[in-house]
Image (cartoon, rainbow, N blue to C red; front, side, top):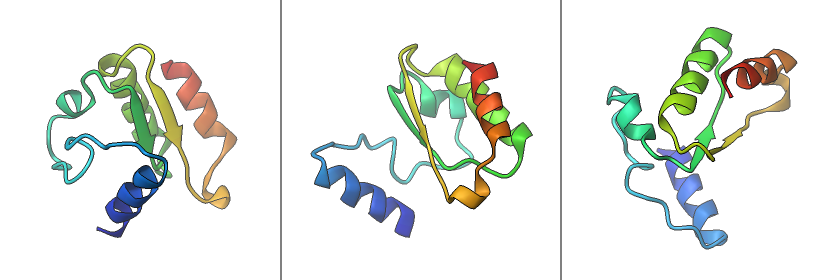
Amino acid sequence: MLGEQALVANAAEVGVDLPASVLGHDPYADPAALLAGAQVVLLRPTWSLAALEEVAQLVAAHADPAVHVVAGGRDKHMTPAMNAVAVRSS
């Protein structure tokens, strides 16, 4: 997948080794297991605020308490309502 290749290239450029759980994970795998203890979560938000809230709640429940969430996409697809969802889940 092109997105994974870009992630690997960008991480290598700044000297970050990505754990195996980051790449090639099964999208149908247990999200709690994927997020368990995560210290950094990279996220491409969806249009659906309900789906974003579900992901934010999973991160809050299963990632490391000091997790850093980096969410990004094209500006035209980002809305202030997405920030409100993230704040509610923190």
